[in-house]
Length: 494
Ligand code: NDP
Image (cartoon, rainbow, N blue to C red; front, side, top):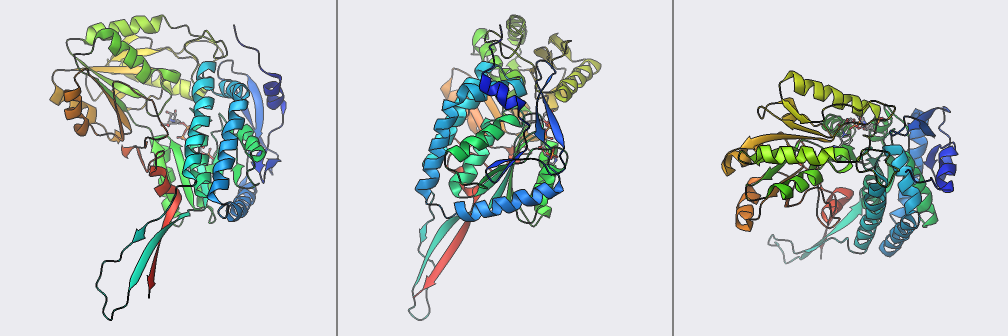
């Protein structure tokens, strides 16, 4: 049975949401709106403003003023505002989780425990960096001619106004990653959420004001079709941080470079691999595959989509996996007993339908699922596919859905070659009980993050980002500092 929506959530949906600029909701200048649709029911749940070109100028002007103020705030003040925001997010956990589930179709338990609770943890981690971002003191290396002396040091200065383009799969947590990186380094930030999931960040922006963030330091621009590009091309934005698909990421990078070398961090998807060594028993492997490929219906950029299993185990593993997936309770994401919900929008559901058709045309074997589920919601069957070769479309194209495609291998050399046979390299996982073997394989696998006996778990202390066509730059750890600050070198002669 579905949980009842909190009165605060119902009231939030009823509001006529505008853009969030200068610390308050403001109507989009053209008076246009976008509808937000619940992917579980297909019904409109709320409306947000649709920004136009004149809104972009006003938002960027507000963010520049916000930057002038926030970049001068003492690091301890920045840290304490982020800590306060983390507390408020936790206090509003159920409200934010319900909004998130209604806009994205994410199971309510995932919204509570991953999206919202983890967002607060990430925010606190970033807050800790506020007082620890420093340059270096350097001893210049060249000999002096007349006895003069030199001293040098570096400063880490905030890059300026950051545009954070956030996808629909984890619209709360990824917005937090972007705004936390920006705010802790002294930047101001404009969040451009996906048109499918714009609601939680609008609520978080209000909480940020309650937490003491000055107006204009965090602005939110909702809209679709050209808003992101206009923000990057604006002469007074300084950096874009984009998370989303590879083709759009390439376009974003090109737009940024053409717009006065606007700095760009790109966290893109790909086609992540998971390799299972034959010493892993069938049940452990199946649990690992469900973790790696089916959490949030596979709509995770780091999720695995290519699964390599030793030939001796492929039948046992795919048939046990099919059995387990067949037992999942598919249902409303607001029902706490549901184990599998819809994908986030109709377009994505349709794309998955096309990929299933392609798999059939190419003669890949669909062992389980492989169909869209009829009804008003965007449901898709969890799917297991056995590929004929590494060239099958389902082995090369990102599905971003609940689809695990398998290929058998015969020896470790072949396993490594198959795992690396991709233009992408965001994440990968190796599964084995033999630590020595894992240690020998780790340097051979090409990926920005490599997990052993786990997949998908992100930790704010551990840098995350892609190699090859999966992106540029890193989030988390201390790696994000590089991307959100400029390094200024100072030399003094005396
Ligand atoms: P996209 O990856 O296409 O990103 C859409 C966002 O990018 C929108 O906010 C859009 O803003 C902005 N954008 C588009 N073009 C530009 C540009 N040239 N410059 C700046 N911003 C731009 O996501 P979709 O929602 O369209 O999803 C498409 C597919 O991507 C999905 O089916 C899924 O497979 C995959 N995906 C992958 C994700 C990942 O993390 N790997 C995350 C989400 C989706 P505007 O509307 O204003 O143009």
